[in-house]
Length: 455
Image (cartoon, rainbow, N blue to C red):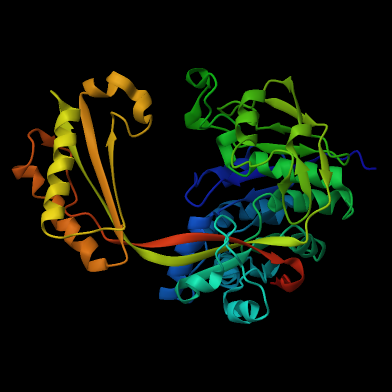
C-alpha cells in the first residue's frame, strides 16, 4: 500500500462562493486536486430555467472564471480540477472552458472529461411507463401527479465516471448532478486504487468529501464555537484533505491564511445535512458517521480516522423540480418606539384589506424580523423592545394575477398604515415562479453515466 499523501483542496462550496478561493488554493501551497462544488437542489432548478431561455446556458458560469484563474497551475503544476459545474448542461460548460482556453492559446494543452447521463428529463415518460413511479420520498405520491409541471429530473451519480475520466487523462472533469461527496472521493479512489468493495476506505472518501464540500464552512466560516476569536476571516483559508491509502486523512488549510481548522469546526460541518448518522447513503457506499473519530493533531490540523462503511444500495436518488405556482414577498421596516406593535398592526391592516377585496391565497406567512422571526416564542419579551422590526409578508398561489394584486396592496401602507415606516425601497415586490423539489429513488440499472474526453 502506497505511503503517498494525496491532497484535495476545496475551492467552492456553492454557486456564488468566494471567487478568489480557487486561485488561492492552488497558489497557497502544494495540492494535487482542486474540487469545486456548485450544485444544490435549488441551483439545478435555476439552471434548468436558464437553459429553457438559452440552450447554451444551464451551467455555473462562474466556473469559467475559476478555471481561467487556475489554468497555469493545471498546465504547469499538474493540478487536476473536478467540478459539478456542468449543472443541467455539462456539454455547454465544456464548450465554454475550451473556448476560454483557446482564447489563451492553451486548448491543445488541455484535456477535459465530461460526465453526462444524470439528466432523466428526456426519458421521464419512458421511465414512468416502465414502472418507475418515482414516488415522492416524503409523501409517497407518484410523480405522475405533477408530471405536466416537471422541468428537471436528475439522478445523483457517484464516483465511477469521474474515476474513468481521470484514468483517461482528463485534467479537468466536469459533471452534471454528481453527489457533492464524489468530487473528493473520486480522486482518492483513483490515486489509491480502492476497490469497489473496500467499504471502509470508500466511506472515508465520502466523509472527506462531506467535510470539505461546503468550502470554508469547516475551516472557520459560519462556525458557532468561539466564533469571536476565529482569526482573520477576511483572509480565510479554504480546507484541504491530506489523505492516506488506508482511509485516514487530515483536514487542514494553507499556512498563513485566516480561519481555523479544529475539532469543533469539523464537527459542525459533519452534522450538516445529515440524517441517520449510521446510514449516510451515497451511490458508492453507505458511511457510518458514528464511527468517525476526530483528533486535533496540531494547529489547523484535524486527523479523521476509524471510519467504517457498508455496501451501497441498489437505488439512486433523483432530484426532480416542478412548477408549483407563484409567490411574492414584501417588507416594511418600523422604527422605535413600539416597533413590534406597529409591525403587527400593519400586518392586521394588510390582511384585512386582502380579505375585503376577496384575495384568497394558498398560503400567507408573516414574519417579524428583529423580534421573533429567528427564535419565535423563545424571543420572549426581548422582541417587544426591539428598536426596529421588519414586517416581512409572503403569499403563494397557483393564480399569478392574484399574487400580482397582492404586490399592489403592501406599498400604500407606507402612507396609510401605522407610523414610522422606514427601509422600504425597490417598489412593489416581485412576482416569482415557485419551483418545488420532489425527491425520489430509481433503480441504478436504468441510469448509465457517459464519459466523453474532449480537447
